[in-house]
Image (cartoon, rainbow, N blue to C red; front, side, top):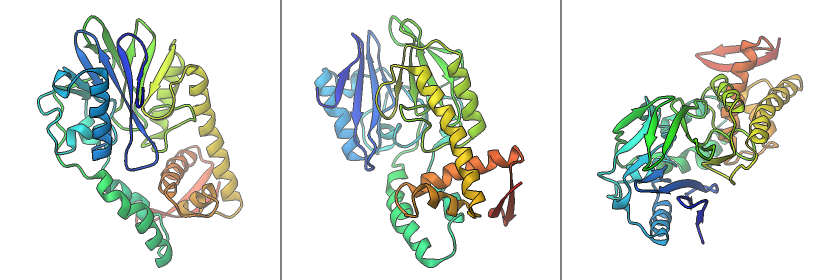
Length: 312
């Protein structure tokens, strides 16, 4: 059915396009209380997809009784910050502190600082990554949250509940939602079928989250990006293994003369500066911090910026 998939008698999965190549998914639970989990990017293309999905399902935005945000990245809060009237009076539920963890355009400052001063590289980064991202991250309205939740809290969805599990790492304030009766987890961006997300703000928190999820009995995971995960334990193990593999790759790149975060990121992109470069700079930075704490590498800083990396 186009961008709408019915998962069971009450749960719908909605595919939403956005101004980047990766689609984002929202989930709608249509019991006696209608609950929307995440609401796409703020761009017109994403919001049009959401409205078309509602029409296909047979509801209108005013029918939605509550919106739950797994986290406050712009591709998950879009309908609430787009400047439009879709959900002006709908209660919004999110993790405590979530409003402070919205990733904005200033997120790119750490990336800028780790690009060499060479004007060609600087211009290429600006043109392909920074300038093109300014509008993507711009919020037209402030995000308003009506209820903050923590691990263990229950959210009434009409005849059933979702249990809140705090799952930080991708975002400082990230939650997943467990539907106990089916052991299914609405997991936001914590895990996908291909491993960890492209953005991680705290790697140790993220590993802790994966270990907590590994200890749970889950039947399936509904992610914010990519296909439904029908083998949750395999996906969690894949993510943990990818972290270890990335540590090892970075150590190898350093041994082969990469001495800055940018040089390491270019190893991942095979020397090309493209739209993936910013993600690999971010990934490199969080892994360097982890390897430094484990005393496997030495980091030399200048004005708070990593200027040289060597093996310990």
